[in-house]
Image 1: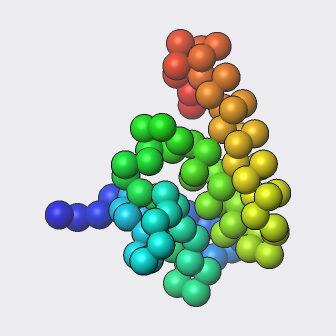
Image 2: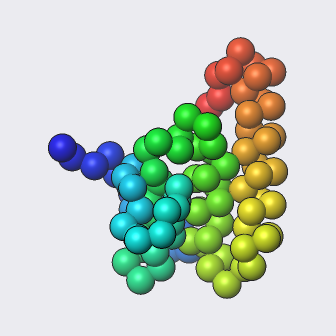
Length: 94
């Protein structure tokens, strides 16, 4: 089965966002691997925290040295506002 993959440019470099379980022994919903410029998003996590998770890992990709608490806060805030905007527009967001 082919892994759904989105290519994005972050800070002028091509990255891949893959909807697949992160390749680690520790259980993670998401993982940003700087060395190969790949972000993994666990498909089972999308339904309950997908936007927050994607925002969190994208922040890691762009600002890799930012501390985890700050990345968590940015991911949570962006997700909260995006979800609010979607609800104001009948769950449609562009």
